[in-house]
Length: 212
Image (cartoon, rainbow, N blue to C red; front, side, top):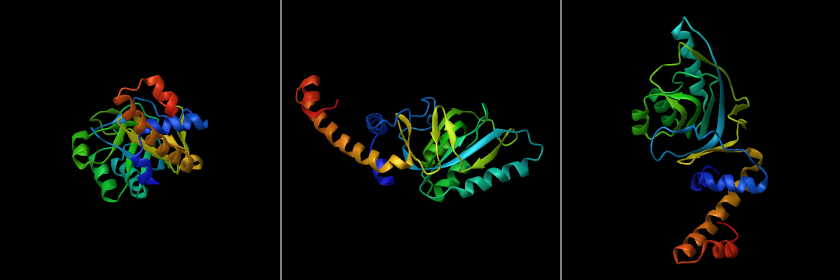
């Protein structure tokens, strides 16, 4: 399933979910890849955070490191930080997750060390970039609980797919139907592309193939 989701664009997934009545599954457009060409697909490992002031940096960072160690291979860590400043993710975290086969990270929050993360090739989508560390200011409250990013509810195990167009969430209960229909849609779009490239009008192409 992960290979299949990786092979289809997010636009096709959204179109298919709209047709199936599974709508409003796109994360806010401000959540964007921190490097060029980044793409991810995997089941969600959810992280709920909260603002918190710490006097003990060691105790605070241990909670974050324990959470990072719990993310399974092939999954996408999805952070709802509930915090409007700081970087909640950086290069050492990316290095650790990449080494263990984690598929990527989506953060409704901040990221730093973006040049190093891009060099690693680990896909990270974040709302903002800042050099400020979150350890003194924020903490992990829970993992593997439902989180809401923008207007999208993300359940543990839902499929999360991101590319240069943005990030979409496919409910686990609809994953098989959505990816199968998206694969078919991509095949038909290839026919439409060839047809209009050869001079067919958009309306004629739509009438022949049923999509545009």
